[in-house]
Length: 135
Image (cartoon, rainbow, N blue to C red):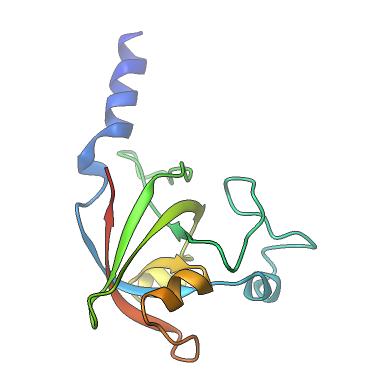
């Protein structure tokens, strides 16, 4: 019982999540997932739901205290466009960005709808953002 409680407290610890993360936001679509080979007929997110390009969701890469990726749990994430101050609240439903994108400081993948609501143009492909988990 004691070990399980410690593990649970570590997983819920705020130190695992940075209060605010800055970097780039990109977007991903059903079509881009097919192109990358990460989906078949139905593109499913890590939470088991189909990817909806019009949804207000995101993919984040969050690790626990042991460095292992955490599963998306539906918590809300506030994303702010650093250029124009617009914000959007999205639900964490998928894992991402990929390793190469993370190496380029991409901190969040958004659906096209969420990306556009921040004032991003899909042709630009990325925008500078701050992410913060909502309590």
